[in-house]
Length: 353
Image 1 (cartoon, rainbow, N blue to C red):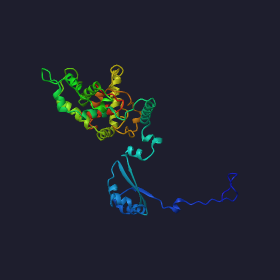
Image 2: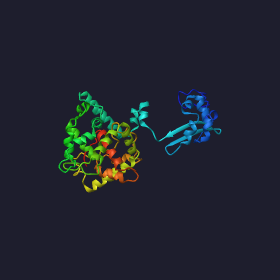
Image 3: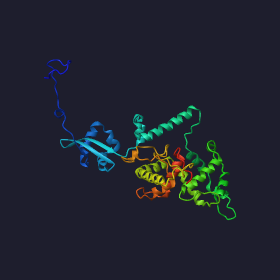
Image 4: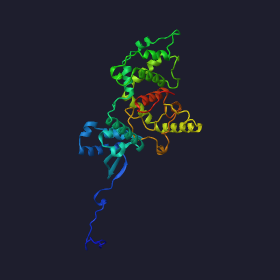
């Protein structure tokens, strides 16, 4: 019986309490073992036999056996029997979650800085639509792909003048490109002179470690084949794989950013050398669009405080990434990233060294 402690408590009031331990047996939570399979199957089948029918009779054992650093399985045990299963993973596909759940109130599980940029991009698109400006659903890379897919490379190379020396130069390639007939759907978005400029930028990007191809610089036919084949092969799936590969190494990329930015600051060059240049690599977040869907950043606990928004020179950055053994990439892989970022990465401009 309780003594009144407030005016609304009536004299003689009694409260009956039932401790949880009296009604529910305490649960022991531990890491799942394959031996728990039989007990867990009974639990799952009691709820629905659909799971076993869809995934197989031993899917629970396979799920438990597949545990690693990224995937863990926990069971709740009562009186020595497993009565519940919880599977966790750090390999989360945010795209799938966004398609199945309304995640906007949670910033789509992105870091606030990333989500802010996405909202700004959406605001620009909305403003463009309200002002009547056309807003194409295609990236520049899509138009280039459509054009190059129609290019007969053997015929194109036959039309390139080789000059008295018999060598094909950058000027010869530019002249031959001007005679190429762009597909109608491409001509509505880019003109032939823009196409020529874009193609020459691509030739550099595929071998970014070599000088720009200008004037009388020799152009090898293999380089043109390599360039066209690379861009044509970069469908949405290929670009997503490239983006994911680098997202998995994001901590190392942040380290490279910080090192290059520090070097530039010490040299006092980031104000002089970068003024008026296009190659600012503003890649503090994965490029927008389908090059790779953004997920929660992988920069570690101190990643939020790193100054990775500062533009850095692209060539030193790529070379540092290639030299870093933790990255495990070569120049060809880095070139694919460069092409993906520039042609499908929104406002990332990387046309020249």
